[in-house]
Image (cartoon, rainbow, N blue to C red; front, side, top):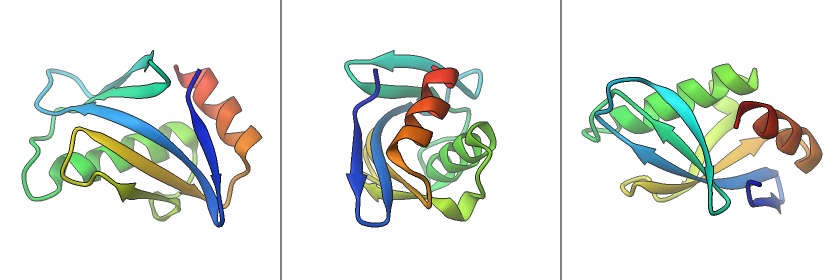
Length: 97
């Protein structure tokens, strides 16, 4: 199960990205962290942009509703989903993982 945290303006959760993979996909949950593989390299924010694009498409929310709260330069990031409640995010992520 993904560790979700209620924030003032949305819900946050941790993501572990693996850049320069052969496919862009969500591979599951490990230790409460959503694992994501990306084809983009970790250069000039390309992997961050691809991560946000993937999650916005899978969660059916606009890209502007997802932002990186911390860890922009790390493999492990905390993402914030704006405008959704914790139960909505839990249901969406559970269906994906």
